[in-house]
Each structure stands twice: as structure tokens, then as C-alpha cells.
Image (cartoon, rainbow, N blue to C red; front, side):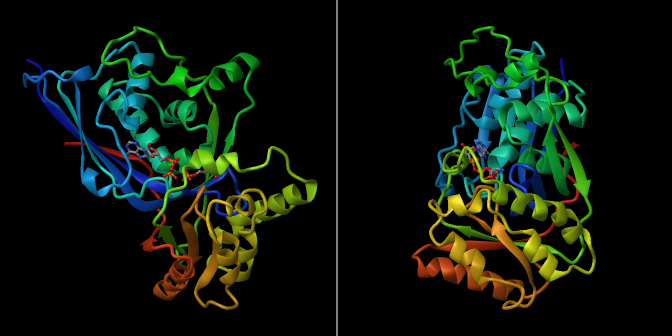
Length: 356
Ligand SMILES: Nc1ncnc2c1ncn2[C@@H]1O[C@H](COP(=O)(O)OP(=O)(O)O)[C@@H](O)[C@H]1O
Ligand SMILES: N[C@@H](CCOP(=O)(O)O)C(=O)O
């Protein structure tokens, strides 16, 4: 009889863009999604798709998270990876226990961590032995901008890009998400083979990070779904706005990698005209909040931006973390918005799997 086994997957959250690096730059931070997995083929319980999900503190989460393995993002992604390798269900009696302290829909990359978790879960359960580069391909079939998933998978401060693909491969990655992920079919296996990702969809480079820099995440008590925050962006940009961002994004890796950090250079390198101005329609007071804090008026502060698609504000600093956070929280409170804040560090290691 097959023996039981267990392992844990630990995925850091992410802050994408860091100002001008829209869909390019990502930062892995020290708040972790954990997925605890046990497989016990000797136990007699019968579950849909052989998988039971439990989620720690589900009642405390304001969002709806499904515990149906066909619907839950983590297990649905794992099922996609397994089905690409002709494995139709989870191993008999798989138990997936999710611990998620990362607030959902706030710009700290929870959908990216869930997608990475699902891809790594599929790889482990199916004993597929996929390389990290290939895992990224699978992530990019679902989360189609590479900044969050690359940071969460590889860790550190990363720059990412998508490859120029052949026309047939472009068609493969542009197919609707509903055709990639198995659609919930009430436990009935349609037997459909999902499309495998082309090889080498996206790539990632790690930049140096100055050891003095820490990240303060000010997390407002409301959700901005990333899809909504992408829908408010224009389809086209003026040349001056594009050049403005290019000039700053070229400076950003040097600015954040130089020790001791230069606050003026970092503040300048974190300015953006491509996404933040448009997202203020969804985040009351965003631009005023960003403009109200500068290294000249706030000692310890290096730079400030929207984290991912928001509404979280990311302030990079070397010192006076409490004071900086309290001021930003106060700006939201004036607008009737409650916040929590967290002091985070760079998560240099990305996703780790530990077998017990
Ligand atoms: N641990 C998780 N388990 C299941 N679904 C998740 C998990 N984390 C995130 N999600 C899904 O991703 C959505 C949030 O994604 P998104 O709007 O991109 O915000 P974020 O900025 O947090 O990535 C959640 O509403 C939920 O549907
Ligand atoms: N580049 C993306 C990043 C989205 O990050 P998230 O943490 O909000 O999911 C964007 O800005 O849309």
C-alpha cells in the first residue's frame, strides 16, 4: 500500500511596479502564503477530485474563497498543470490546508501567490520535475503580467519581460482564461486536454537591493480588484509620458541597489505617469497622499508609490517607520478610510518547498 507523505509550499507576497515599472518590476516581500499538503492514500475518504481544502481563518477573511477544488484558484491551477501532464485528478486523499495572512485584493499580489502556489502544487503532486523557468511559463498562462509571479517565484527585486513569441504561440497564450483553467464541471471530468504553455514566455532578472531599505505597506480597508484597476488605464499614452517613465525605470534598479541609499535619487526614480494617475479614480486621495510625503519633509523616507494595482501604498524607508506609517494612515483616515500597516523586508528567496 502507498505510504502517506506531506510537504509545505511557502510563497512570498509581492509589490509590483514600484512606481514607473508597470508590468515590469516586482519586489518579493516577507509576508507568506503557506500551503500545507498531505497525501494519505490509506485513508478511505472519497472527495471530489480526491482533494479536500481547508483555509485557516476563512471566516475572518471578508472575501469569498471557495473550498471546492474545481473553483479555488490554487487547486484549479494545480489541476491545470496536472491535466497538461495527463493526470486527471489529485492523488487519492490529498488534503490542502491554506494559511494566507496576505490581505486579498489590496495590491500585494495575492492572485500571483495563489497562481504560483497552484503551479508548484501541481508540479509536486504530479512529480513533474519542472524547472523554475518552466513553472513561470505555467504561471504566465494564467496571470498574464510577469511582475508579481516572477517576484513570488524567484524572490528578490526583479525586472521581468515577456518574449516575442511566434504567431502560433501568441495565439496559444492569448486564448481566454476559461479555456486554460479547467472550468468547474460539477466533478465530471470532460477529459479535455488544456493548452500547454509555449516554452520561455517570460523571463526575470534579479537586481541588487540595498540592505538598509525596508518596505512599509499601508493597507486600506477596501478591495480594488486588479482587473478593475487595469480597466481604468488608457489604451495609448503620449510620448512625453512614456519617456518620463523610461527615464525613471532605467534609474530605479541602480537607485535601490546602491548602498547607502540616496533618498533624492530613489524618490525621483519612483515617479510614474503610466498607471498611478489613472488609478486615483479608484483610490480616494491617491495622488495627494503620494505627493504629501517626500524625503525633504519626512526623514527616513526614500520613496513612495502605489503597491501593484492598489489600494496599498508602499513607502520605502531606512528609519522612522512608525512615524511614516502613522502619517500615511492619517491621510486615509481623514477620508474616512481605515488602514492597517506592516513593516516588511525583501524576501530574497522565492517560493520554497519543504518535504516532511
Ligand atoms: N489564497 C487564495 N486562495 C484562493 N483564491 C485566492 C487566493 N489569493 C487570491 N485569490 C483570488 O485572487 C483574488 C485577488 O486577486 P487580485 O484582484 O489580483 O488582487 P491582488 O492585488 O491581491 O493580487 C481574490 O479575490 C481571489 O479570488
Ligand atoms: N502590474 C500589475 C500588477 C498588479 O499587482 P496586484 O498585486 O495588484 O495584483 C498592475 O499594476 O496591474
